Length: 372
Image 1 (cartoon, one colour):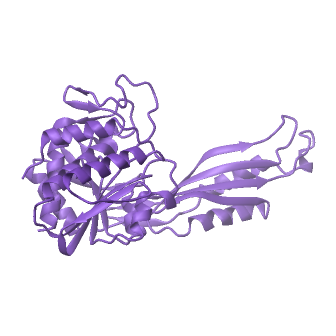
Image 2: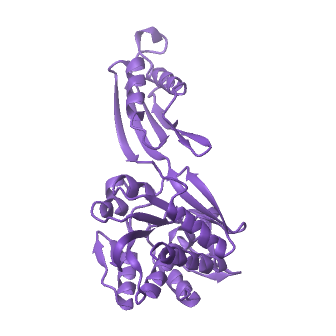
Image 3: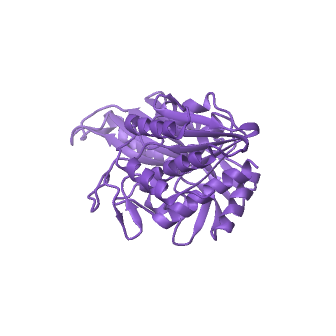
């Protein structure tokens, strides 16, 4: 019962030919629904998120891949929606991130349809994973409200193809974007003592934030600490006026379970500006952490070795939807998958066909071993 190379390539090329930039996932959602229906399943669709389950039993595993991609961007040599094959690679937006994993899930669903498995396998194809989607609009957030499982395996391009190494993600930092509007007092620059320079106040806030010891978590042999950085600053109106307002956006990558960061930033603003500031948090997303020696991780290592791949446990710097299945759905979650890790979001994105086929087989074997 091996995955079928022709099926995988066909599905991947068809998926790449459907543009599915975040917020525009309806067409690809319909395609996945139709393909699953042809196989003989009866998937459900909720706000363009497709899901269904097979099997019976006390064990359960949720399998996930995201439907959306980042925008095309840049100047491509290959048509980003052409799905051309060249030198053992398939090119196109989403080839690695994350349409290779969608194709793998379709083929795994086909293979397992008439196979008896010892437990429930829940397939989820979700929207809004990439940039710009607020937490509550993400498909993983929506489905986590009512889908439950013992474990979740979130499929992302986490293979270092040249090294034949599978990265196993057991946690990630969260995100907290904090927008601060500082109010000063305008005056002629010839008489700066009559005003309050809002930009100077912003600089003082940033300097004080740079001296704070933020939340830390011990992860294996290293510490993960919340990090904050200014990513945007706007202020001033006229070259002869002391600026009376300044806006700064602070981007924080938060260590798991950091519940203090917003309050810490607020206290610094109060110390520097008194009441002359306003603060908003336009975007938040949780971090999370799991035991890197979990039973599911052992199975991933085992099945990777069978196919001559090594593995490495990693704590991800970027946010992944596994964090939402964990923090919202309370499902212990890990991430690995099909696709070249170094191709995410790049111009002329591609997936290496040989590894695509082998790693799809690996994912299938992991599922069968877990539900055995």
